[in-house]
Image (tube, rainbow, N blue to C red; front, side, top):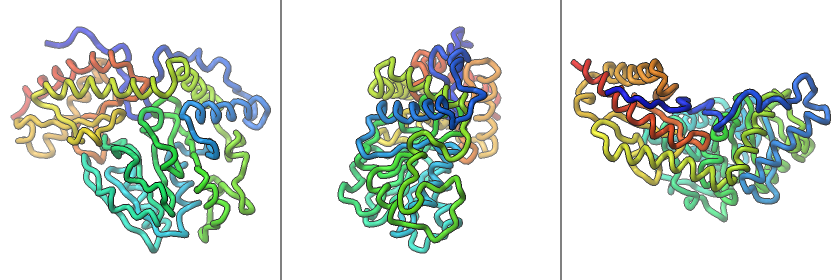
Length: 384
């Protein structure tokens, strides 16, 4: 039977993600709209977003944190174009965004000393192959595959190269070991449910040293430039952004940070995301038709939770019919107002992707699960 209870907030998109519980447009009432981001009020709010982020994440002393354009993509590209080159590079990928960084290193940066380690959706490449005398580029969590690195134990403490980590769907939801990471990037639109288009880049002391010592032999667009005269451009890491940010987005980011502080900080955020994953794991254990794309528990994401359909009746369908059936489930749930935007990423295997970040209430996940069973039963009735 069709469930009678729908999630209070049916927004389960993997980016932009659900707003924090209780959010409304009133949260933006103090935004410095109509003011220059270089005026005192604008710079103060930007600097506050940086400092609150560093404190909430427990970022170590000596790390720089800046707000940069073009979301996490811009932050990653800034790191690659500005820092990669003096050593060989190893790039690890297991889904579309990591594959994109690998393609950029090969085809755009045209690195001569480049090794690529790739795995299919649902799997990790062999991380032990990383050579830490080289720079190593990887996502902490593959947003389109639901696969994360299990921990930071594979990252050498005595590394000579830089560890460059795209952590956009991991920061604020997973235990990120800062001392093992030299460059970390993310965006506002993920775990704290901020608005899109703005990225953040954190540089550890070793990355800061590289920035001062290394001048790339490639042209650098203005929005990628983090150093001048052999020194980091201090303003970037103090709220003096490279380009004009949206002060509405800045206000929204501050609102998310303050909410996170109010519920208990980083430990509470991590616990909320883990509770969401646990609810889905318990349901999958009982399900006759759904399974995790990441079959190995240790590498399973608690944010971008990717599911595949394992029912033999579904698997007997031609690939095209499988894809249509998965999309039909998504459309049916959208029409019922039970779940929005839970389709698998366009390059990923057919299935479902449910965001389990900290702004999602576990009660809403629990309310969604009977709807998944109902929707699958409805679609399965049409199998031929």
